[in-house]
Amino acid sequence: MDSLQDNHLIYRLGHWSTVGRLTASLFHEINNPMQAIQGATSLALEDINDVESLRTYLELSRHESDRILSLIARARRVFTLDDVPLAPLDLHTAVHEVLHLAAKEMSSRRVTVYQQLSPAVPPLLARYNEFSIALLSTLFAVSDVLFAAGGGELTLRSMAQEGFVWLDLSASAHTLGAAEVDLFVGRHLVERCQGYVEQLAADGQWTIRLAMPQAI
Image (cartoon, rainbow, N blue to C red; front, top):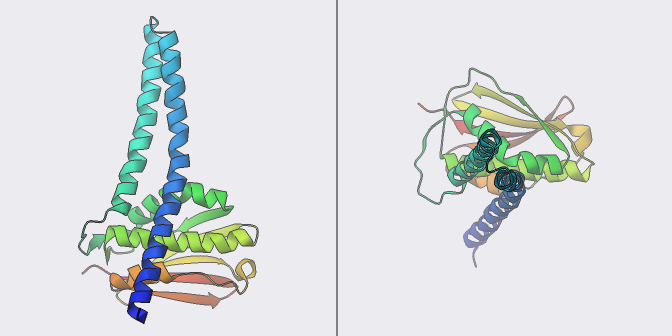
């Protein structure tokens, strides 16, 4: 097996590891509304002759069902294996969707995520599914390092510079120390979208930068 095949195999393993980790997290996320629906339907059957109570239980079930459908829709957009073309993508929307999907995993790793996204960044050029997996993979890799140090804070910042949209993931250099972060999957997918990944250290901050080309 040559180095190109080796790299492809490593990428595929890392990609499916990210997908599997997110899937496990979503199972836990979906469990809560499912429990609520089960409880509401049981109560509805007990009070089936009480119209107002029945309405309350049905509305609760519908609300929780909407939560589940929203999670599944987000996951499908990320997990799709369709050949998605490069297209303009709003960074804020993409980050919001990914953080929503990753919220349970970040919490379990004792990582608090803060957003300081610039409102003025232009659309970036990317494949939605690949950019999402790249960001998820990077978030999971950083969260593992922070968790090993007892948890910590991660700040997301954005800016436009030199024809690229930058998304910086920063943590205290003291917290991360000299730890190695596995960026293979994220780097591969960002480069497929014609971007690049950097690791930076300055002013007591340790930063991973995902740089994506601006949509023209």
